[in-house]
Image (tube, rainbow, N blue to C red):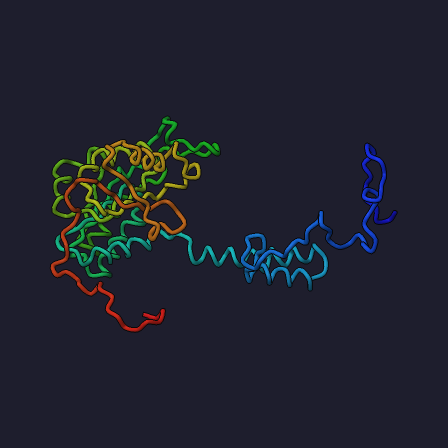
Length: 325
């Protein structure tokens, strides 16, 4: 019986149990085997994307799995990955210009605060951004550092858990006098604060932030304990809407909430300074990272003065009924 079905040994063989009915070839559907329908084109079981269609077409015309794999890895996967990186990879100077443009229309004086200067690489770029955009008469840029390099630390919250590589005492040492003289010859809207964060964030400086409202706080001090020292002093003087950037958020232990700047973000959002304070991830500025946040203090006074003239052009007046604006 080339097309026979298994016979149940517990029953007597009869006409209904020995095989297909007369005229049945054994290949087609029966009452017990309903015809399976091809999944609809919109079904999740069928990938109709142009990429998959193209890959299937290539697989048919390329001989051999080795050549197929070589072509895929070198001419499809790698270019797609490089293109994604080129378009979406975070570059930390982008958001400096975006933030300055956003707040340029705000009334009054503003400020940027950088913690962790090193040799001033980012600091001078921020100064130039204010000059280029023509807001250096209203935006003062502060930077804070001991200029003695990284301090030693035995706190596990600062430790690299994935490799034996740890920050070394004295690493990222800066040149205070050289930076001061360099900036003095080029810019007018800066202040360099030499010393420990909790010492240089004096009460008079903090109170001055009520006049020159911070629009960007740049945290580049690597350690959890250093970043925590900044927020312990600064938290009551940050306006809602201020941008907070964590340079090393995902550089230590892949952004684990247990260590580094990522730990501080997690703690703030879980009530470290109260349940009315939150750091909200700004995806438009962070892109493919979790480095850029908006500070929100529920119940506090509005962070910034409104523009002098309200813009009423937000109303979308009718133009046409097509999808085009």
